[in-house]
Image (cartoon, rainbow over all chains, first blue to last red; front, side, top):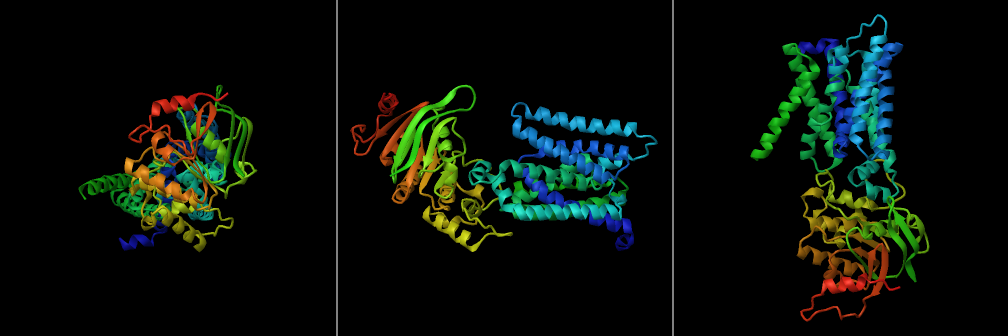
Length: 266
Length: 244
């Protein structure tokens, strides 16, 4: 067990798992309390278009996915603010079109040799040092922004009408939360993949919410619970030689069931 | 001195006017009750007065200035205090949102803000609950917290939208007793359905159903029946008649 830690790819996987847990704990808390899970799902799937774009243009995957998912976040923010009729239909549309663009761009790429599955379902054991730098930078950026605007974000999330009355720009912070969600999705691509990221943005957060009495402690606790699940999932995936992303999600889900059971019996 | 002056105010959400040619003047330290049927525009008028909505026509002045220039003078208690009931937030954090400090610290809250929030909570009798999660309070307690939040900016006028709609009878009376106490220091504007309770405390009443009719109920006891209860039907009919 301990000798595993001598391998660089294991070290990288552990660091990546913790970075993702911090980002998803913080942003997942905001997504859950603002009831944006469906929107975040839309952003996550749309970012596949960014992966297609990156492969097609030959630029770094993280860069393509970041650009595309932030654009998706802006588009979804614009639609949720302005389109009141059949909002979910439009989000579903963006969700599917983003993925379709990704698939087409990869089809059009000559000599295509990218392992698509690794972006959809994660490949935590293949995290490179460059990946880690990029993930660290994004996580630091998220922590910085949340620290800077914590009170405004809290006010907008809890009672947006009152926040507006107090002169806080609800649209700005709403858009900001979606952009940070987009960046979190990008951080999570290598660890659990685009499709599974929603589970990481909701399951540990749900448990943390029940145990917290402030948004700050919810974020903190989510990050800790999430790290715990990620590391256990990673260990199981290594032992049983199964996909890390799926393994992490199943650990999350089983823990949630135990949590609900415990909560009921107390 | 008039603290609220509304002239020729009209407003619509979509096609049809919700408020039409509304005029209203309220003096300092009045207790104004706004009553009227559902969809008559009560809450809309309140939201216009605090500046959440902007008038289609006409103007609204509080202390001679537009509502949005009066952030520190007005306190607002919204209608639905049951939104986000599971939100992980402490009572004191909710109250501190009402504070209008210009310089916010980078992390945490200023001592002055915490003191101010505690003072507001003490005024509404909720200080002992300061560290409780908001969702663990009863409807009446939560309403008091929302009043404390509005008090945190030391307002000169307090606007409340149906403050007793989700509270039991005992809690309702407590809320109105509290408002009556606050009324010694500030003007109170309340939108409400509870006509009998509101007329016990209000000094003036405005009935809104697209148009506004205005009534001074000071020293007016003729609405009372023998058992000191109001006949709401007659009262509503009378107030609903336009004065023009």
